[in-house]
Length: 187
Image (cartoon, rainbow, N blue to C red; front, side):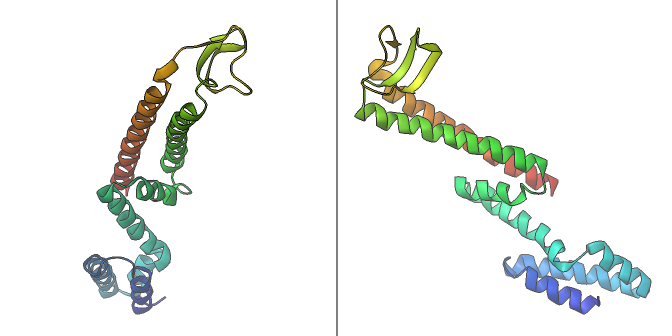
C-alpha cells in the first residue's frame, strides 16, 4: 500500500473525530511515514506494515475518543457503551461489563421492590422462618408469607429498598467511571 493511499483511508476512517484531533493524528502519521520514506522504500514498507490496516489503526483513536467522551459526560449509558465497545478485546472491559450489568440489575430490582411494596405490602418484604432458609427478600406468591414466617422490614421496606437502589446505582456508576479511566490509561 502506498503512503498516500494509507493516509486517505485513515482520514476516511477518522471522519467521526473532531477536526483538530483528526488533523493531529493525520499530521503525525504523515510525518512519521515521510521520515521513513526518506530512509528508503524498505523503511516505509516496514512502517506501513507496523501500522497495520488503516481501519485497525484508526479504531484505537476512535475508541480512545469514545472513552474520553464517556468519562467527561459521565452518563451511565455512555460509560457502559464505552466499556462494551472494548469487551471483545479486553478482559478488564469484559469482566467489568459483567459486574456493571449485575450492579444495574440489582439497583433496578431494589427500585422495583419499592413499587411492588407499595402495591402488595402484605406479600413484599424481608422474610425469615421455617419455609425460607436463611431468608427471602422479595415477593411471596399467593396471599402472603406462609404461617410461621416473619417479615422484618414492615413499613421500612420501601425506604430501605429505595436507599439500597440508590447506593447500588451510585456505586455502579463510580465503578464504571473507574474502569473507563483505567482503560484510558492503558490506551
